[in-house]
Image (cartoon, rainbow, N blue to C red; front, side):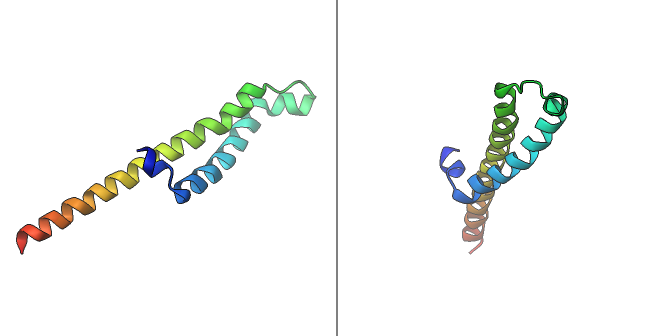
Length: 82
């Protein structure tokens, strides 16, 4: 799982996703505080970006592993038929 998550394509896609989703979450969760000039909860701000990054990375890495295992199974099946 870690090797799949180290894939640069997965990393950059997850980063883009987390920036988009995290910005929406921060607007929803802390928009009022930002508009009123109240202090922003930095921990919440960071988690609004970290959680979507982790979810996106995990999902993409798991999908990559599943896709690779499906390809291996298909190749084995093709070799048996020959």
